Figure 1 (tube, helix red, strand yellow):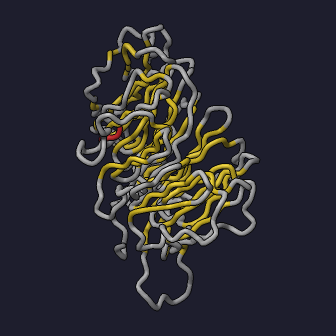
Figure 2 (cartoon, one colour; figure 1 turned 180 degrees about the horizontal axis):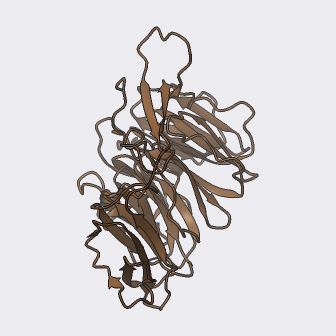
Figure 3 (tube, helix red, strand yellow; figure 1 turned 60 degrees about the horizontal axis):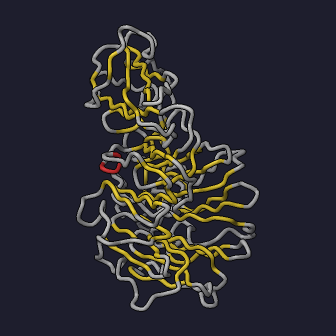
Length: 437
């Protein structure tokens, strides 16, 4: 770890693969427009689970087949030939682990620390998790085993740990959920991520991120602990009715029982103040979520209309930033279950769904050099028209200075002497609407 963090080099911890409903579904990705957002599978139906890795993703279909996309095609972004009868998936930064119906485990991808070397004879497995450089499995007797890197103690399962129903491998830390609703943690503990908060009970789901952890309670609330230099453990006040959680590198996701998604934290904290991982406008009817390293994925089914997301120079569009001259990409999603036939837009303030000046987007990106309001909408084969969305392109009057937060070892720096080398991070937050440069 460098003293002054200047880039996000470690990404893509495994997120718990959330279950989804049957029928036509669509994947919606947002965040960094890297390889994971290129070639996102379309025409999906009867999907059981999704999982987000560093630069790739996995989809599990009801029949037990796995679909992969993104990645480099060598370690990630592909599925071993003949892989069938899969019941669970877990994508990590640069490798994958899956569980088969017969209780055995298959892993593939980067193996510099033994993270894909499944122990010989491992059987009767009921749950899995792929972390940064180590993997975990739960056996049918409720015990836990692991393999891969143990430099942080992530494989040092506490003696007597039993009655485990789920596990989560993070960036050196490990978590386990017991059948009585209590949780255990061990391994890396630099930010307190390896220590479960006292009194935590009634837990129904867990998720381990990069130096932090999440727990979902039976009352629909979320508890977070560990690293917080990007706001990843700052659970929004009043958040409730949550049914699923997912921890990524510097951000967290929660799926609510009304099918909407709440996010907190940021990605790329040192670049223009970091980009909030805010879900796209209009995202609803979500059945599953997965937070990856630099982006997030939602599985949507049964929405009323398609959904169009927009990126600016391959990154999330931030309100108030001047995007004149930037490459704008409009990405349509068939969230209503019917293929999108066209996406239309205008730059003169008129409604693209009815305006004679509307232009059909060619999916090659567009650049606007003058001040304008981009209005856009997608229409699918069944005739469902998306409500018009818009993005202002131009300079914004900003008289409010940004705010820079300083963290020492991922905690706010205090007025004390630091006698040893300390990891210092600077997080700039725009408060005036023009972006931090």
